[in-house]
Image (cartoon, rainbow, N blue to C red; front, side, top):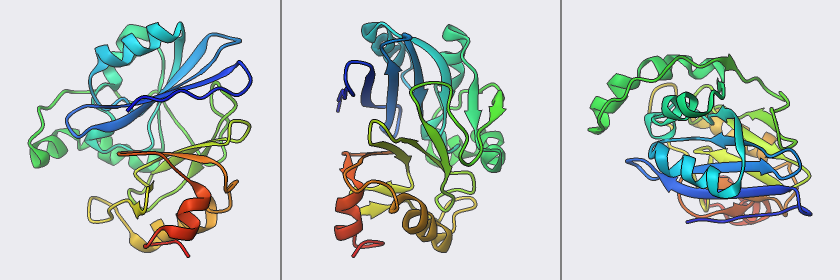
Length: 217
């Protein structure tokens, strides 16, 4: 799956599956500055870097919606090639540190990752593209969505899916917290906004408010 979105001629988005569990990695860029961020580099670092090169952009930040293995396994390689800092919500740092255990549990080859360079907090302005972070715990304690108001785009990670929600049976998962995050934070956003999910197809806020069997209606 690959898609691009433009707001005027400056905002660009490309999303495609990577890694052993086919996590959606998203590249967001600003044509005016030539800067980009990579969200959830879960594997296939060379593929991600090739997409960035194809877009003619320079990566200035690496953001993670959460620290499950399938969303972080290429972070170190992307940082090594670009020098961009790695951002993660501090409540998921314990998961980052449990990466080897996660890989064993899912039968995925372990690739050590460098420590995150900085924490990203609720309502924090992002390094480029006019976005802000929204702390949406539930799938994991530090799960974070990234909202780009001008582009009407939400990168939701594994918090919200098309007609589904993130699982809560892994480390630190909490269903009640997840439901609250979706209803009180995400469903208050523009109903026409596109939602980039952590796996699978895009959806919209309006569709999920009306039709999601877990939290909609």
